[in-house]
Image: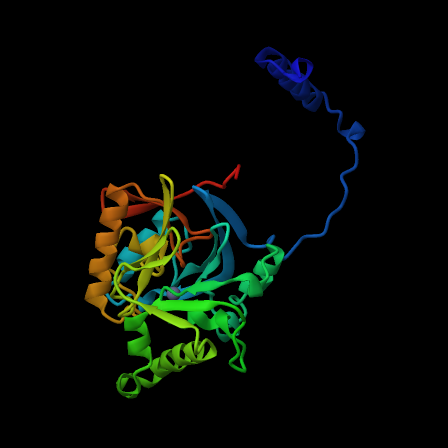
Length: 328
Ligand SMILES: [Zn+2]
């Protein structure tokens, strides 16, 4: 081993030599670079991390460009300032990732949410291709934990014909969400452009009929995983806490839709938050708890892989993304 260890002095000498070559104009002696085509797609959207003895894979489904007008309390000036601060283009949309997570406990294989499937245009619906790239067979998934029954979380669970894409999985979802989205009286009173949310939730439930487990409160949903009610975004919106040994990961669903805007302004609920005030109150409570307890969190619309920490900032909070996991 020792003969290949380069000490600092050798390294600097080497650097100087390289600099000399460059300055000496040896360009003519440079080997020709192989030409390579530009590529118009990323590598598969997969990122693994260990939580104690449990392995969590963030599986990308795609992204959404969310109109800033969807944040009713946000003012144009404040939005522009935060977009600039986040080094994002100042404009009328903010980009949100659509993330899902596969949890391997060793003897259970669990999917948390499923992205939008074929229901939301070409930028989403990559879950199944990315699962394949990860070597995960959908029929090996035994449990699907659903944070809530919105299209971008359950659209990837079933085919356009209505059959389950995870043939051997049990769906675990909050009783409150099932009650709300299955209620045709509430649906009848909803604005026309919101009725689709109800039919999609009902289609997803129908595809898994007979193998749906409803939960309420802080239920244990699998070994090492417990549910945490986070009402506001939907009545039964639920987070899942994955724990093993001293390690934990809090998958918080849709606490945040735009990292650029909502960490600084937790009061800016998105129009999809069914109860705007409850959504903001839950967001603030979760930010306070996760920042104080220094938890590792994962979010469905945080920049992929959507894993990181919440830090207190001079104004509101800030997202501190977790690094690439160099070693598993
Ligand atoms: Zn969502």
